[in-house]
Every structure is written in C-alpha cells, then in structure tokens.
Image (cartoon, rainbow, N blue to C red; front, side, top):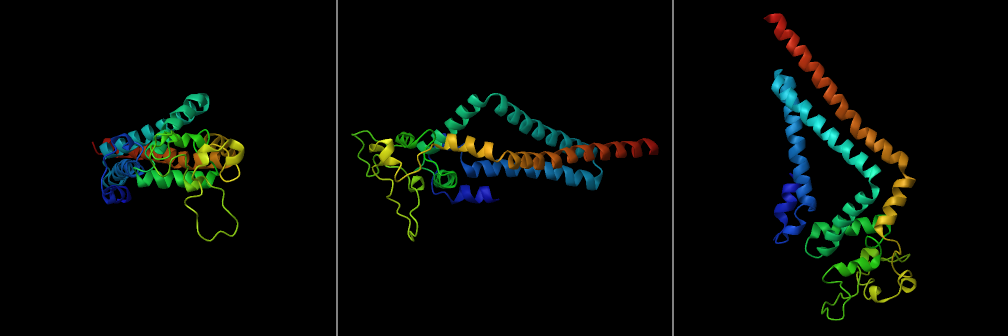
Length: 231
C-alpha cells in the first residue's frame, strides 16, 4: 500500500527510464510478492490445502535461491556487481531532478555514507542540470547536491547552495567543502568494516525462509498421511 500511495502521489511520471529503479515500484513489487506468499501459507495451513502449501513452499524456495544466487554472484563477480550497481547509481544521478524519490534516496546515501557521486564528485556532470559544459544554461551548472557538502558545526539551517561551482574546482579545493570520496569506495569500506552485521542480517533473512520451507513440507506430509489413512 505504501508503494501504491507513493506512486499515485507523483504528479507525472514521464521518465520511463527510471521505472525499474523507482523506489515506489520496488515497494509495490515486494509487497505483491510478500502478499502472494503469505496468502498461500496462511490459507493453505488453515484449510489444509496442499496446493496452496506447495505454492507457498515453491515460492519461498524460489525467493531463497534467488537471494542466494545474487549473494554468491556478487561475491565471486565483484567487478561485474560494482558495474551493475554503478549503472543504477548513474541512472539515479541522471534523473536526480526528475524523480523526487530518487532525489531523496541519493541524498540519503550521500549523507549517510559521507560520499559524493559514484566514483567522485565529477560524476554529477551526468545530470543535465549539474553538467559542467560551458553551453549549459542551468543555474546549477558545475554544482553538486547539498548532500555532498560536509556539515558546518553549529549550522542551524542547511545551505542548499553549498555545492555550487564545486565541479569547476580541482580536487584539493573541492575537498574543503564536500565529501572527497565516491560512494563506490565508501560502500566497499562500510561492508568490510561491518562484516559481522552483514552476516547477521543475511542469517536473519535466511533462517525464517528455511524454517517456512521445512515446516510447510512437514505439514504437507502430515496432510497426505491423514488422507491416506482415511482412504
């Protein structure tokens, strides 16, 4: 419901290129999958319906194997994974001003990870408004979003123009006012320094799914035994 509400609240959605990376669309897709799986599991268990229980078990197994495949491929093919994530971030940067959800997502990532752009702050030239070519008439030419700026101690009001003209500066000058590191390097450092947390989250996601698969198979076997005993 949250995803549907977020999608409906957008006045227009003319940017088809952002459809698959739209947070609202992702929420809708996840919600639909979760509803289908939980519906099959709950109704199947209450009604002793073998077909629904098998659908629940199959769907949960498919989700688990998909997550496992992504994790394994991401580990063994780290360069390709980095490229794929980079493509996602590039689209988010390109459409930063076109989609409010993407804008909020990029601002959150940059502020939380203390980074700017994917590789570095010059990546913001991918955006039409921030592009640093001389022919760009935008008032935000050569700028970066305010979320790239390092906070000033005691600042009560955020200066949303703090990143103006930063791309025209060299890296040493820019480092004085914005985060010098790209989000790609920050993400790698964060994962390496939080391996225990990443492992705990992975285990926390996997165990309920495995338990659901095992319990549904046990219930299916019990129902089949009861049917056989009656016959």
